[in-house]
Amino acid sequence: MKKSNGEKWWGPYLWLLPSILLISIFVVFPILIVFRLSFSEISKAGVVGGFVGFKNYIDAVNLPAFATVMKNTFWWVISVVGLSTLLGFIIAMVMNQKFRGRKIARSILIFPWATSLVIQASVWNYIIKYEYGSLNSVLLNLGIIKEAVNWRSSYQIEFIWECAVGIFVTIPFVTFCILSGLQSIDESLYESARVDGAGFWSRLFHITLPLVRPSLSVSTVLNIIYVFNSFPIIYTMTKGAPANKTDTMITYLYMLNFYDRKKGPANALSVIGFLILCLCSGIYMITVMRKEEEA
Image 1 (cartoon, helix red, strand yellow):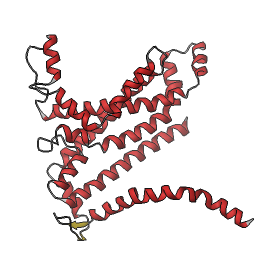
Image 2 (cartoon, one colour):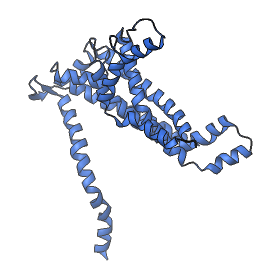
Image 3 (cartoon, helix red, strand yellow):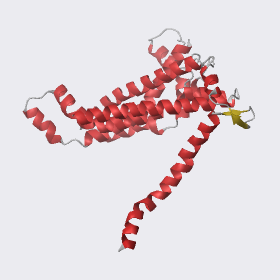
Image 4 (cartoon, rainbow, N blue to C red):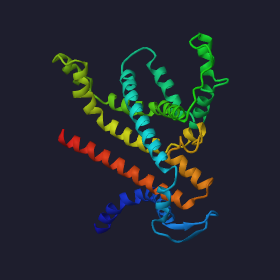
């Protein structure tokens, strides 16, 4: 009997052991290494020296482009996550309705998310080219403009285009996350609400949003992590030019590490980014859980 109880107690942990080992090797262990390197002296050749305390963090914060990069990262995450969530929710509401060609529309919608981000960014680079871009060609042929427009006339506009591409490729992910939540709502709830005289907005705020909140919460947290760590779009479109004006934290620490060879500050910047993500995700999840408890 004792042997049976022992097997029952150890059983779940034995099943979880492969996953725990994989997570430890490929997630936890690298994070611990980066933390250690952020407090170590590292030469340009990558040779790890002794403990230097918070020197790497101080050097990272004092870098000339640090303030610009942090500001860009903030606006990049806020704009891409915010607008993709809003537009994704609207599209999910439409896709949840019954109409002819719905399956085809859903298939087309998944293409931007399924396609490589490098390919997406390269295509958009070609579309907005000044000399021979397809956007100018279409507008000229339609007679909307009389001469080619420089769609990349300043670094502010360059950054807006990066955000636009980020929103475009992120919308499908948000849409399908929310759509899964919408499809789990019992249609009888809407029918009862219509019988009671509830209009569209009343049904939206009292039925749809409360019941779709779990899916929305998961998609938002994953989206924040995904967008914050997004590298290909910005690197492919501008490489942070000019002078790191369009860089986010991820592209900047890459340039810092592999081009400028400032490996210590780059590791410190990685830890700062990790802590920011943990803080933002934690605050969001605590806020959502409190609202659910109050409800």
